[in-house]
Image (cartoon, rainbow, N blue to C red; front, side, top):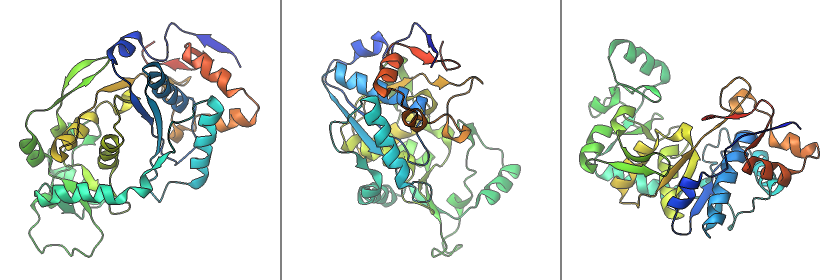
Length: 305
């Protein structure tokens, strides 16, 4: 394997210096495909920060989506982590075993009148967006609010539906919000730009936003270590923390590994799997050491380099 050395390290000195107490970090893969080098980079960042601060490294399996999660990908992810030498300090937590906790959080928001049922299909939302100017957020056009204004009895509640957060009402209830990223400093939150996000899905239980927020608090995670592709979502998570009276952790959104095309490595783009390297007899701990030193396989680069 050809390696290209860069000047980066897995955790920037600025981040290490900012963590002045034992960190509890978590690597939280979704088992809907095999792990790749981008996952290894993120897991190594979590592991290094925990070890450097005398803290704990945890693994959480985000298998809440029963339609896409696969047992073989859970087994594969755990095997990949062991191959890299990244053993968690506790047994992995599985979100599929945490549904009651998510439901309790969801119901508390409903009781405050901050959530509403939504029957809209993707096709209906797309059609509504053609006729309703809406704010564009990080995920594209915000939901136009069709069901927020639906009259009582207009829809059959027995028909499958999701639940959305009334973000305007939630922001009003929470007041001004902000959060701190260990590399980028203080960030003023603007959750309203996302529109009314889904809290409870009709094809699966809780949304990623609700489940991740509840679990980070329950596990005492801090700082939350994850990729820059999730930076914007933190605005939603700190809103949910305020509404649910949960502690707000520090965050560190690390840079991403990019493929030869300059795009981030992703399962959806068939990024080469760690399992293939493992099956080929490659030394996982040696690969982990090289990544820690900023040595990447040919064609792989860091998003800020």
